[in-house]
Amino acid sequence: MRRIKEILEETGSDKVNIIAHSKGGLDSRYAISCLGAAPYVASLTTINTPHRGCEFADWLLKNAPDVLKKTITEKYNRKVCPPPLRRRVPYIRSVGVKISH
Image (tube, rainbow, N blue to C red; front, side, top):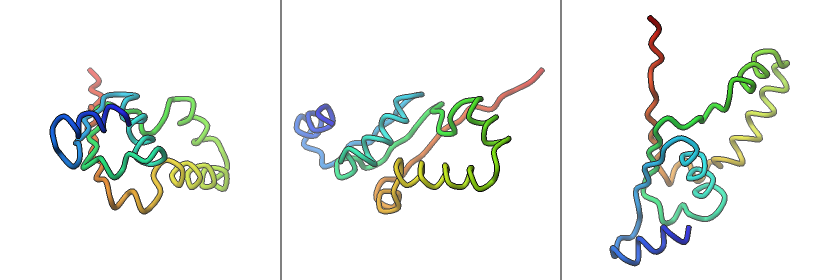
């Protein structure tokens, strides 16, 4: 968040638009949602960020009981993106399309 404040001071802007790649998108979401960066961020655009986790998590969720999946999803989403922040900072994501030959 220190760098965001430096950029705002250098440019005289009120907010920044963050474009983040891969894990940087997860880090940015966390900073906005949990570390107080939301007032300084106009938008977050992520590119190739693993919002859905990894293959093991996919396997686990595919094989876990529905009640466990619902509990995990609700707790994670409350922590990473609480409802008030979802309305204040727009999230835009860009994903690749897997092409098989």
